[in-house]
Image (cartoon, rainbow, N blue to C red; front, top):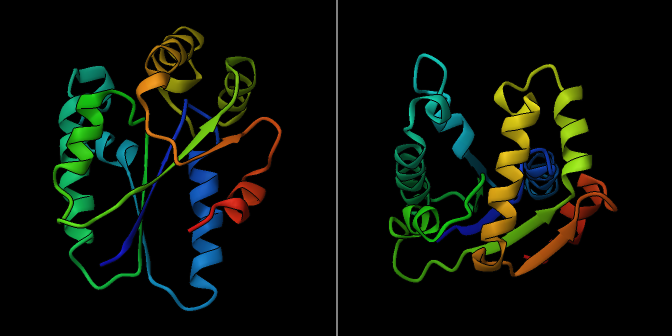
Length: 170
């Protein structure tokens, strides 16, 4: 069974950058790696994406189904990326996993003062560049933070994405 790594944290904390560096680290020795990002699933909702259409939880369910299917394949690693905070969002991911799957939860954290600058400096970002949306998302993360699983936690303000990827103990 593949090894599942869940990378979560607030908007613009570096989840995708860490996943990209982790992919390079793992594929170097010849492993196969799948990255499944809940934001990519949410973006499938047209127009405007799941967040603007009140379909966020449906995107989480589809993401969980996708991750669960990849966990039944012969790949070596599955990296699930996203804002997986609430118990319901966590269940949407884990209920589709095969028996015996043990996710490694990697939590990134950075203050909103840092992540908002990152988001606004990235022209490829959409809604997360909006300060009101961004701050509201951070407040949600902070409120739900005590219930988010975290086998390994990293300060994404103090550490670069490549250093975080190198520090993840698989």
